[in-house]
Image (cartoon, rainbow, N blue to C red; front, side, top):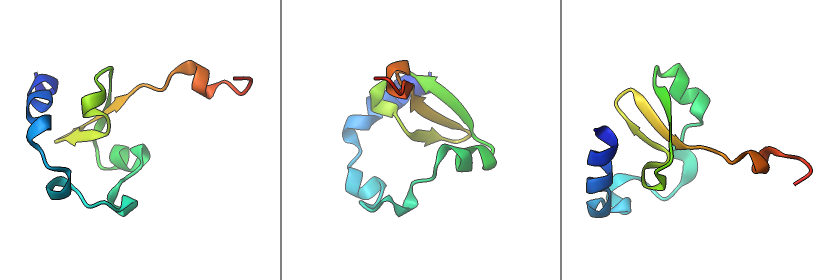
Length: 70
């Protein structure tokens, strides 16, 4: 339900008004866990790294990117 709502609203958000261009305001996933947010794995790239109340939406990392031989 939340994912569909965020997907509908995403085209109307102006990135400049939502966040600053610098990367200093981006928290690592461990910081979100410390803040009590639950990490939700999603296939939807439109909501990657979006946090909504107590949930952080992340697109999964393909296994081949974690393979040293690749």
